[in-house]
Length: 254
Image 1 (cartoon, rainbow, N blue to C red):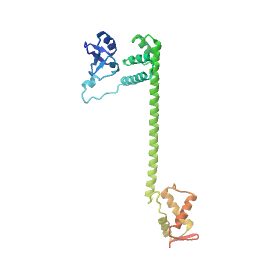
Image 2 (cartoon, helix red, strand yellow):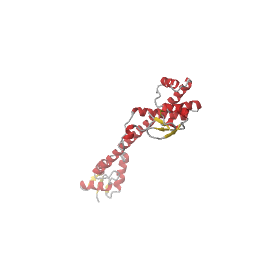
Image 3 (tube, helix red, strand yellow):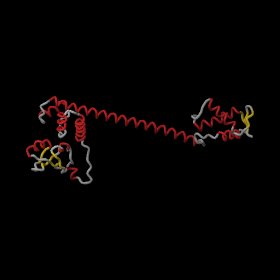
Image 4 (cartoon, rainbow, N blue to C red):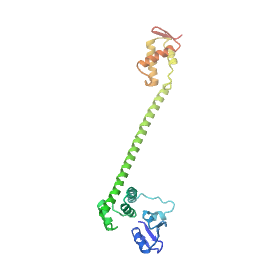
């Protein structure tokens, strides 16, 4: 809990005592007892938390621990701040600004309204209900924004994962081609045709030559560049440019 000191009479005050004291003492400023920051009679309400004793005396090696209660309070403060910005009614806005200065307000509707009626002395229960509604509306918006942000982050992570898998597949195909002695996308047609003819005594039937050459092509390229009739047409084109003799159904080296 935050405590203040009156800069006029030095009386120590709980946060919910400051407003009443300011009328009694006619003080224009108050200081936080822990951090020594100065506030006027309006800005003190926004000073919702301060350094703890552990932080104050823990030195440079102090590491703050997560406080679940503090986390919930920060969420509540955010909801109230947004409600203040959103509402247009002057009376409602002023009530929300008063609520902003309290750290112990109940988070359930019935108890919240009872707190306003009994502790802050707001006799207009309809106004209290509207204050709850304004805060609840902002809470719903914040929740929706968080869910959308979470969904977007998950989709982005999924896309990145799929992209990585695809990249690994591509790298795998390239490495396979290298292991077979050729680089993917650069199959040596002329050299392969002549090598196959040489391995078979310098002469082969065109059909058999086509079969063994295309088998090697598929092992290097993975069969993904061209296939079917297009691949047969590609072989016919390459054999004409290979610098060999094609006589009918036979092919031979010069």
